[in-house]
Image 1 (cartoon, rainbow, N blue to C red):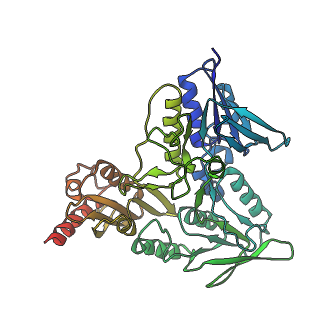
Image 2: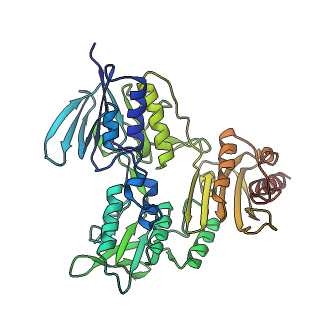
Image 3: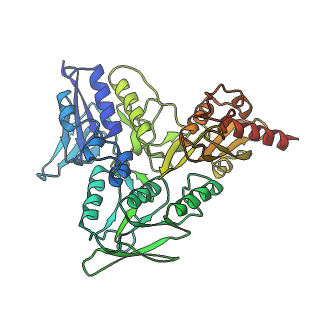
Length: 462
């Protein structure tokens, strides 16, 4: 009996996790696996690119979990620098372009995994394609940025403009600061880190200013200005013009679903592919999708959303590979947990912001507390701010945001578990968390915030 053929589009986290898991469960006699990757690298940590650019991670290859050769040793026919340009759902085949030779050909499939990832948002503005303007989504992007930095003169002004103040923006601002650049962050929003409420984003802004990073809020980029050599010289906004030797785009990403759209596959309101709990594309029993190209269920809001994170992509791949390989797995959804940092400032959030709660019709209360990451008398104790959001009357936890130093960010994991479990803030106050002066005050900051939020819930109900 001939082996089934699995075709995987995309050679990073979701795609190769799916291929590897399917291979563990089914040998090559039962399942032939063909994977296509249009870039030069596979199975790498895109989240680590800012730390490679900054020099914290010494070498590009440190970010690669598994090379193409290692995948091939596991009987996966991985074809690098090969882009799938057309998907024929009815005919169960894909058209591929070898980007080195220019050859095109069709490959049939019995089962298909779409893991095409996301693409950086690149506004259609004058000069966006100029030399010295860089996105940072892939290892190829990171290498291009480093090559561009190496080409700059070593003396004189070294000015970097980062467009966008989300996770990518603040991480790249830190990277450029460590590279010795004067850094300006242009943010069209009210405060940096729009994934936080504005009052918490203001704390990030103040800290960035203290680090020597100039953050300009309410500044929408209108064009990139270039010199006679075609290289960027300035960034123009509706709030002024800023000199730049290099520009880094940190505006965010969008699901890379053009191929799937053209094939008639279903996409959601955020542009990502829609799947069921087994990560099958809705309405297609032999097609799965995972990673940054899909939308996932927000367990708190009850709606789908697009979240581009390697943690989710790897889990999607494991679920997909298990189901294709004859096992069973599901991905129930997310609560929206994310952490980041800019220098020693740590930023974390999970669940809903205030505007998210309003958008889904939830009534809520909030509480914000100031605390420290260690006992106040213990050397090195540093401040952190915790904001908590809970549903009015029921007290169900809806979201938590944390800005601080000294281990502040990972405290959000307690809140992520509480959200997943559907706990109330009153239930949280009884959580048995670890305590010792080097790690926490007697009352952990998350529990202090929970106590204050309980009081807010009771006060609103009286």
